[in-house]
Amino acid sequence: MARTVAVSGSASGIGASLAGLLRDQGDRVVGVDLKDAEVCADLGTPPGRAQAVTEVLALSGGTLDAVVACAGVSDFTDLTVKVNFFGATALLDGLRPALSRAGRPRAAAVGSISGTHPVDGAVVRACLDGDEPAALEAAARAVAAGAGHTLYPSSKSALAQWLRRSCVTPGWAGAGIPLNAIAPGVVRTPMSAPLFEDERMLKAMNDAVPMPLNGHAGALVIAEALRWLISPANSHMTGQIIYMDGGAEPTLRGPETF
Ligand code: NAI
Image (cartoon, rainbow, N blue to C red; front, side, top):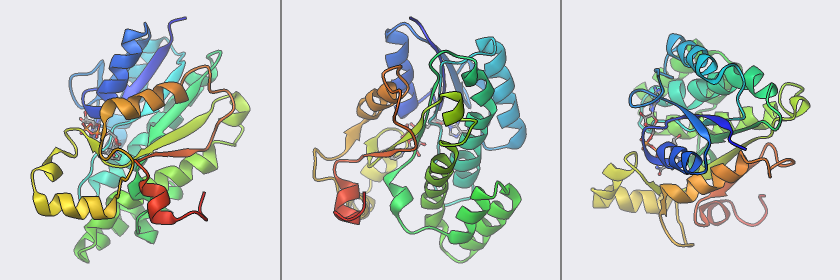
């Protein structure tokens, strides 16, 4: 049966790939992105997030079968915190009531292997406290100290922790909504394209994210996994951060962490 699915970041990369897969199988996709989407909204700002939720609810008639928070940015600024953490969690939380009205609702986010890299503890704590001004202040301190590179890992670590904390609560598990994430390694998309144009950056990336199994992935590989996570078949997996990273996570964290 055709389902209605909200996908953020639907205009590019992994989100576009997922939207294509879902449309091909007959689902209705309500894409959310800065442009070229059913809902054009900026998930980096509180008003943009509220607009996204309102417009998705209006277009879906108030009931959603699945939500995928895929939109993200990767740079050394506080934009990563705004979009990757507060944008993703606001969308998932804001659309949760619409999910709870569906028969077999599902939700997913896109994390990153970077969430296992060193983070800025103050940024992560403020994110988990839901305190965006404090998170942005901490992010500004990190940038001023030359540690802007910790902000993307911080945003993805906070997202993973928020997800694991939320998934078992009455609002999610209690409402029958599995909530999981795919955490990719390096995926060839417009986001990662600049890294492939600079040999020094590529080497640094390959050192930080070693992928012994089949190397860098295509967007479709991640989209296929997201499709399964939000399918009716996934009735019992929740709170899982699934590393789809060519073996980077076991390489970096070793066999004792699982
Ligand atoms: P992409 O750049 O191709 O697509 C990201 C999409 O998010 C774009 O369409 C962009 O317009 C949208 N977006 C960005 N800021 C937004 C905002 N403020 N409001 C609304 N939409 C916004 O990137 P890609 O690679 O498809 O990334 C998708 C997700 O995968 C992101 O969360 C990213 O962090 C994650 N990821 C990507 C990896 C990679 O190597 N490409 C590796 C690990 C995770």
